[in-house]
Length: 230
Image 1 (cartoon, rainbow, N blue to C red):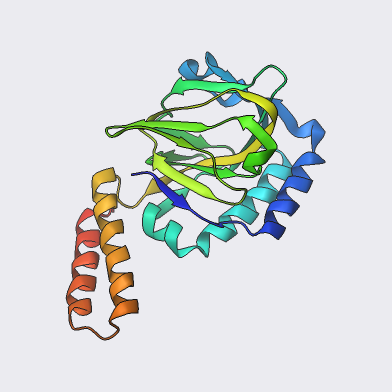
Image 2 (cartoon, one colour):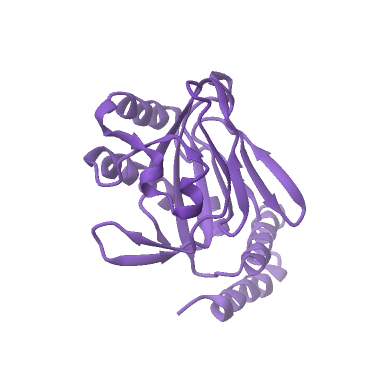
């Protein structure tokens, strides 16, 4: 299930985050520092060091925005969220990230806690007209999907998907990326719950007080109760 979450960050928040990242020249490191064996062979980008104060500061801004975004909560059903990281792809050297699959489990630095990566997330921080290339391409059972969103928008997709970032040939592409351990680890089950939740919301808007709402809402929560991890 690939889902676009619009306006996770406002224009003002995007400008703040971008300004802080642009001023943090010394915090950028080779992106291969955090890649596994497979990823390191195909990864060519820059990242903000995970343990830097700027990463923690801006990560807190993003986590705060996610906690207030109902569409994100419905789609991801988050149990735990990996601290947001930040990357940059520049035209100089045609930076890119070749086809790969994200690691299944990540250790949260400094916390001794492991997160199962059920859902991958990319939050775009550069306007699409500011760079050429840099599309996030995700492969699933229905084929390939090319994603290039406005700054402030987020895309969620199964972490088990093969995906890549195409070479940037003009400008620079900046984004935040992270993973979610969902309360419901199965993507098909999450998709069913998301569709049911969206139908309940539409029915609430179109026919408030409809007697079917209690039954549908009960079914949603009973399925969530059945499938949610302990």
